[in-house]
Amino acid sequence: AATLVSPRHIITARHVVGKHPKPGQYVVRFRRKPDGSLGSLKQGPDSYEQVRVMRWEFSKTGGDVALGVLEHEVTHIPPMPIAWDLPENEPFDGMVAGWGSINRQVGASGPRIELRAGDNVLIRTGRSIHIQKFPVKNEEVGKKDDGTPITKPLVKKGDVAVPNMHDSGGALIVKMPDGRLMLAGVISTYRGGTWLGQFADDKDFPLKPWASGGEKSDD
Image: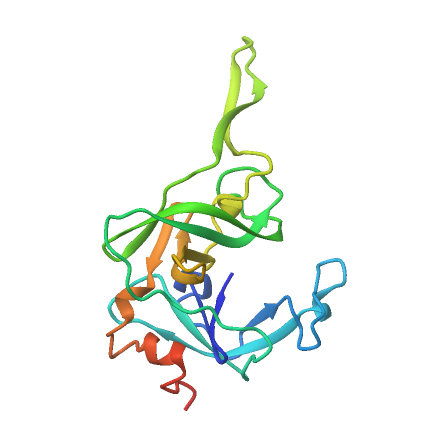
């Protein structure tokens, strides 16, 4: 998963793209096309708006974050603004978004066929954001030879609070008091991810100017 943060940039988790991604190796699929139509798996890949990523930028100070420079601007979808200032150690209302899986196993890799988002409680600790609510319960999946139940932690049916419990690169969102939704972080594991506000004044990884369109990264 990834999030559009400017007409020319998307942000995702660094481990998703690897250490040395090649120019043009990755393509971003946007569900909404310029004509307003919505793509779906049933209609096939051509039903999505697809834009190639021509280059990747990484922070030298760490953080599981990668910023992709798109082949051309995406102007029919509004970028998500970044919440640069978040108090530390104070829980806040938020959302977790990403591609969900029909497999209810915790951390299941797929198939991810649904774009899902759900309310949650998040908290910033240092350079990380942690997910506080986990819709998981132990359920019986079988029995041993002696009749003892075999249980597994499974994502509760119908609960979208944490899509698939782990969709790297997905969005950790803060709900602002005025109702706006802003991007707080990027999912790294099923328990949280990287807080983006740490890069607000990073000269080697100027995420803030890129996201605001004030600095070009396509030279």
